[in-house]
Image 1 (cartoon, rainbow, N blue to C red):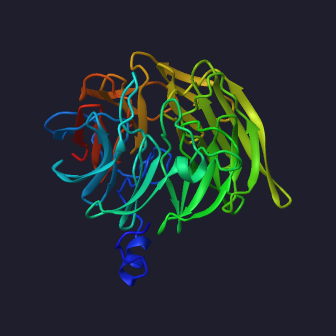
Image 2: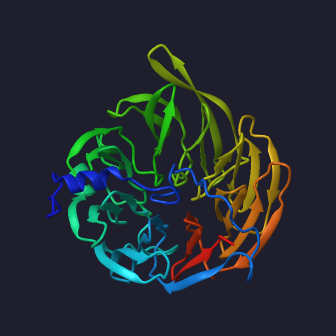
Length: 404
């Protein structure tokens, strides 16, 4: 079901090649899907001469975070009956287009879409909470193709809905689809939605995949319901280690810790596991380095910096030595928050909407400044693009200018 976009035209090929520019935050957890920004020159204080609010606009319910390319931002929300993909002006917050994606998902912890849009060239890839995957034209929101995961892969609606963010790699779209009989993950032609390959037999676990380069080869890393696994670019399993949370809920993405470690974590008293990748002949093996309860990510993943990981251990912000699991410091009082890193800082959003700037050091918790920007449940992680921070809850979207 391909729309009128001339996917064979030279113009479309050129647009597709321009994935993102420096400063863009084009997908879930940023350019590297790791929660890290390369921006510098950011303010370390709030107020007239520091970080300040740029705009505040109403938004419907949903947990989708914000993706930004150029002067446009993309997210998802709902209005009580339908879910929508949104495009807003990244400077003013003005809505440029709003496209219905499917019926709303309702749940006591919060209604609406969970997945974050992925922007690639002239396209925006979105996944509704009930399993409708769609490619939209970036400028207009026109649907170019769509795929119902339940019909295509035999997927069942998960208890807390479809949540994984699609990942682009070249001409393919990599998605956790939750199908049965070897169809848990899939690679699609991003231009048409045609299935290239499927792999794995595991129920949805709510997390989003990452792409890792190890020993000169690319691999896709998934945290599935029963294991952490790496696949090659044709869907063949390279390695796997068991990871079986008691409640089968693993929404936090795996984290690559250069040059050879991968961390998986889950809440509900499960904890973390770190494995080391090794090259053996033509294959790759993964060996457990440490595991323990000292980092129990609930729904937001950690950030890895200089051999340390920073993240929310349920309701406590912690820093650990990534190679040993040894605790370095802990900070309570922020609830089940989220964080990204930029310019030597941790940019932290508390569960109740307090924005906190923290020095990114394993030595001690050093708070640089804080500002109450949202009220109520704020579970969606921050996004940072071109010096502007984007934060949301179920009623408001706020932008904070971090360039002094």
